[in-house]
Image 1 (cartoon, helix red, strand yellow):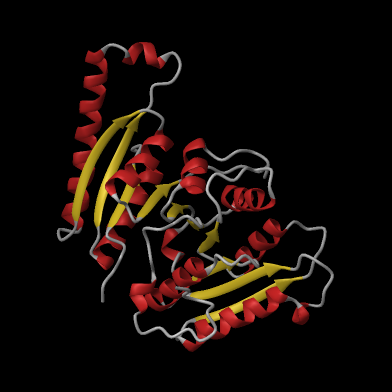
Image 2 (cartoon, rainbow, N blue to C red; image 1 turned 90 degrees about the vertical axis):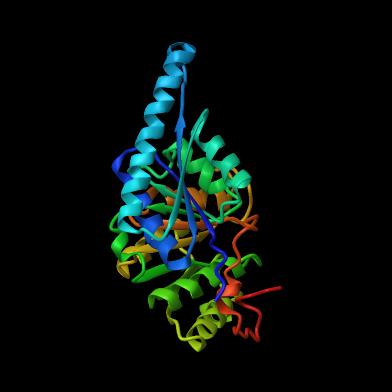
Length: 304
């Protein structure tokens, strides 16, 4: 079986969340026979810029970062000898370097460690996570909480946009590869009865196809209410004890002010579990080759 996850980029800041991301990337790389690149970005904002303007200091800090990365790569290789692990040190804004290197290197996935938690949904995410997840042209996995539970129950919020094939293909992949239970969820936008709505039909079709392919699947459609949709999704994720939310972000560079931007922002900001975000411009990762024998008569999963 040919896998298309061939290159995994892992930004590292040497804190515990990024170390967790390295270990998870190693396990995934072994499973799909992928290569890993560990990246550390040296950021020199404000007053620090004067210190780093001395080339000797920058060379010293860069050398230390390279040594730490090589040590981290070596530890991973000791655990999983069969994988290929490279290292890279850059200087600049972290999210800009992550995005540019991801494209330059041809990454198929970015894995981030994230320990940001806040109580107010209007608060901003960390700049790096915010920009990378919303602008990446490949899927981004942001690790949170107990990652050992990621493969057990996965929540997939759906809407009526056409670009959900990648999202459902990823759900199918996780369902088959890890025997995960997929939980499809959505919220009615109007006062129409559930079973008469288009989103109900979409949820039902997706559930039927996933189940036909051997994936355990459940669905939930909430009526319209004063409770924002993002809160419904987070509430549902907690109710089903989800280990991951698989989120479609639809378009590159959307703003917080629009509905899709606000929904994704809140989910990523307030989720207590990991998020796999896939933008509609994701073009380097096609889950379809995992399922060459897949037949989708209603066109829900794979659309050519």
